[in-house]
Amino acid sequence: MLDWSKLPDLAAVALLTSAFASVASSGHKPISRLWLSGWVMIAVHFAATMFLFIPGFWGTFANILCVASLVDAGVLFMYASVPYRREISSRRLLACLLATNTLYVSLLVISPSADWALTPIAILFGVAPLTTALLALRNFQHPLRWIVVALYIALSIFLLAVQHRPGNGTDLALNAVLFTVYFGCCLHVWRTYNRATTGAFITIAGFLTWSSVFVVGPGLAVISPNLRIESEVWNLPKYVVAVGMILLLLEDQLEHNKYLALHDELTGLPNRRLFLDRLAQALERSRRAGTKTALLVVDLDRFKQVNDSLGHHAGDLLLQQVGTLFTGRVRGSDTVARTGGDEFSVILEDAADRLNATQVAQSLLSNLNSPLQVDGRSVLVGASIGIALYPDDAADMESLRIAADLRMYDDKHDHRDSPRRTTAIKIPPQSEVAGNLAVELGMAPGHLGN
Image 1 (cartoon, rainbow, N blue to C red):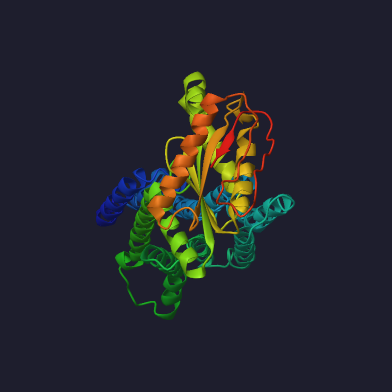
Image 2 (image 1 turned 135 degrees about the vertical axis):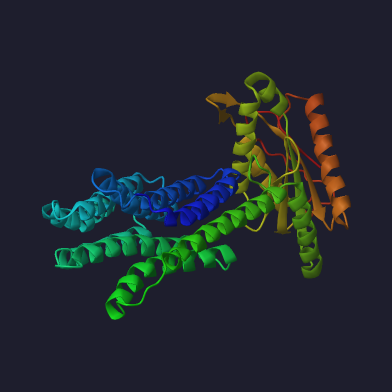
C-alpha cells in the first residue's frame, strides 16, 4: 500500500525543484543544469518513499530507487561544485562514484542475499578514487581531488569495520555513505563559493546540517531509543540547501548582469561606460600626482571588408583576437576598452612622455600590420591611431577624447590620400623629443596620426 504521509514532502520538493528550474533556466550554466538534475533525483527519492511498504519486488525496487537517487543526487551536487569539471579525469571520477555508490547502496537494500559482495565494493570505494587521482597526477591535481580521495578512503575503512556487524551494521553503512556524500558537498561548496554572501552561507550550512542528519539520527536512536522525531525535521536541511542554491544562482546572475553592464559582451573588454569611468579616475590620479596619462584611440581600417567578404562571424572573431592582442601588449594597470563597433581605446597611466605612448602605439599597430588568422583565413587589417596626452594636449576628459579622435581621423584621412606610403609614426610638435621619428612597420599600410 502507498504511504500517503509522504505526499506533502513530495509536493514541497516538487515546488522547490520547479522554482529552481525557473531560476536555472535563465542562467544557462552547466552548474545550474547539474544542480537541477540533482533536485530531480531528490524529487524521485521522495516519490519512491511512498512505495516502500509495497510487498515483493516493487517494494524492494522502490527502496533501491529511494536510497540510490538520494546518494546520486549528492554526488551530482558535489561534482557541480568542482571548478575543473571538464577535466577528463573528473568525469571518470564522477562515473566511478556514481557506479560504486549506486551499486553499494543497492546491495545494502537487498542484503543479506548479496552480503558477500559488500566487501569488494567497500574496498573499491577507496581504491577507485585513489587510482583515478594517481593516474591523472602527472597532468592534473587539485586540493578538492585529494579531499574526495581522503573522504572515500576513510569511508572504505569504516565500511569494512561495520558493514557486517549484527543488528545495525547495514544501517551504519548506509548512513556512512550518505554522510560522506553530503559532507563532501559541504566541503566542495565551501571551497568553490568561499565568499561572504547569504546564498553561500545558507548552502554551506544546509549541506553541513544535511550530512549531520546521518550522524545525529543514528546517535539519538542509540542514546534515546524512545525519543521520536518526525521525519519532516530531518528533511528540513534539504529545503535549506534548495533555498541556498537558488540564492547562489540569483547572486551569480546579478553579478553577471553587473559585468555585462560594464563590459563588452563579445570581447569581454570594458565598454564605453566603464572606459569613461576609468579615464576620469586616471586623470584625477594624474592630476594629484603630477604625472601624464595618454589616451590612444584605435580604429580598424579594413573591418568592414572582413565583415562583407567573410561574414559577421569572422568579424566577431577578428574583434576578439584584436582585443586579446591589445590586452597582452599593455600593463595590467592600463585599460583596453572596446568603445565602438571597430574602435578600441587604450588608457596608459603614468605615461613618461609622448614618446613612451608612441612606442606603445607602435607595438599595437605592428600586430595589426601582420596577417591575422581568422576562421582559417589570413586577414590583413591595419589601423588608424590617434594619441592625446594629459595634461599636454587637454586639461579635461572631454577635450582629451576629442583631441585623440581628431588625430585618429586625420590619420585615417592620410591613409585614403596615400594608401601605399611607408608607415610612419610622427611625434607632434608638443613632444619633448625634437624632430621627427619615422619607424618602418612592414606589411600593411598604417599610420599613427598626431
